[in-house]
Length: 147
Image 1 (tube, helix red, strand yellow):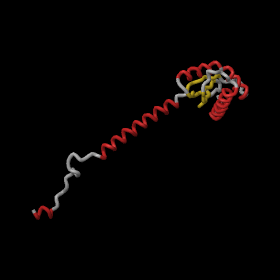
Image 2 (image 1 turned 180 degrees about the vertical axis):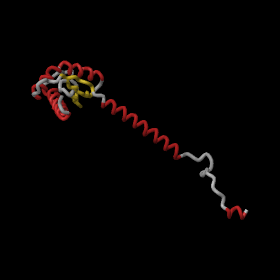
Image 3 (image 1 turned 135 degrees about the vertical axis):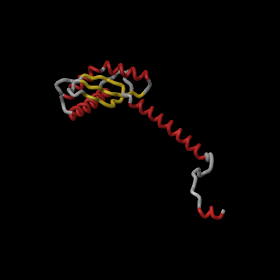
Image 4 (image 1 turned 90 degrees about the horizontal axis):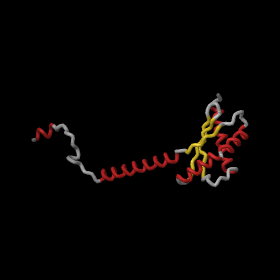
């Protein structure tokens, strides 16, 4: 087992290696506009999960996933060469859901802002159902004496 600091360093190094290799060496036409967002390595440094995003529609995402799967061997050998560790970690690629989640969160925030604006608009033109001050007040003794 390795320390958490070594795991983080290895994950950062793998992220850079995979991104550079995809940019410079992999010439697959199915590979879309890809960004490596995160890498997570197991404590024994034998498996690495690579998270990525693809700019485009679902068809481009599927094509990019196929291209990554076919380039997995080249990427793994490059990671092994450049890291120099005893056991080269196996790579697993996962489509990162962060952009979709962020888009959904933005939509929800926009809907909430519109609902708030609608409530404020209704409140500006609202009037009281009864008196402006619905609470009872104690009588003044001076006013009772005069009456």
